[in-house]
Structure formats: C-alpha cells, structure tokens
Image (cartoon, rainbow, N blue to C red; front, side, top):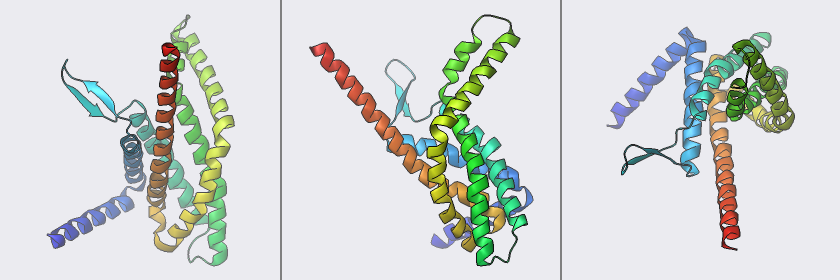
Length: 236
C-alpha cells in the first residue's frame, strides 16, 4: 500500500514538473488559483464561518463558498501568476547561478524591493474592488446612457484603488517584506529557479490561510458583540 502511494506521488510529481517546464505560466496560474481558492475555503472552515444553502423548506446544505472565492482565484491566475513568473525569472536572468553570497543578497533585495511591492499593490487594489462591488453596481445603475455609467464606475473604481492603497498597502507590504527574505533564502537553497513562483505561492498560502483565519475569527467576534449589544439595548 505504501509503495503504491509512493509511486503515485512520484508519478504525479514527475508529470507536474514536466508541465512546469513545458507550460510554465499556465501551470503556475492553475496552481496559484488552486491555492487561492483553498486558502479562502480553509480559512472559512477553521474560523467556523459556515454558510447555509437552503435546498428545500426542511433541507439546507452547509458550505464555505462566497462570491469572494472565485474572484480571488481569478486574481491568482491572471495577476499573481504573471507577476511572480516573469518577476522571478527576470531576477534569475539578471543574477544567474552559480550564486555567491553577494548574488544571493542581490536576489533577495530585488525580490523584496521590486516584485513584492508590485504584487502587494495589485493585491490590495483587487481586494478593495472586491469589497466594494455592491457600491460599483449601485453606481452603474444610476441614470445616464451606458457610456456615462461606465465612466462613473471607472471613476469610482480609481477612487477605491487609491483609498485601498493609502489604507492597506504599507501594512500588507511590511508583512511581506519581512517574510519574503526568508522564503527567498529557502528558495535559493532548495528550489529550482523555474519553481520559485510555485514555492512562494505555497509559502504565502500557509501564511495567508493563518492570517485569513485570524481575520475571520475577529470579524465573527465583532458581529457577535454587535448582536449582543443590540439585544441588550432591546431588553432595556
């Protein structure tokens, strides 16, 4: 049984490596999208943030799927994957192997000072837009022809992105700047350059799931406190 499982894992690993070499960007996009989807699902599960899908009057199914889940998958595949794929490939071309201590430090500085801020800016902007989708829909429904509506939506989207960057960019980037050198050091030592994007996705998946779970737990506590406060006021 163990030998069969070991052979299966080895076969899957070999096939994945082949795909990573033959279609690197597509493979990374699918991998990062999978991690992003799994991140949101696990965080919701660990935090007990369970939704109910009503099938019939007496039957409901528990689930952790929200509108945010597929949108984060889209971001991972279409934004995160290209940034990390081309960013780390460029770093490895500019500073190629064999890596001396000086080259390793330069790679870490480039990754932390260039790739990480670009990714964080895109991530913060995307999350801000996702959290304001209802506002954007409301803006589009306002009067005028479709061109005027579209201009209004774009105008508000730019405002949302600016606000999100001003509010959250430093926080997110600071966390990543501290974590990224550690991840890059491990990548330099143990991971092939073409697999860096996947390795970083795995690292940030673990960290992101932990942070996402903490945020969801805090949100649940806040909602429960607000609900209790409302109940106490009614009792008075």
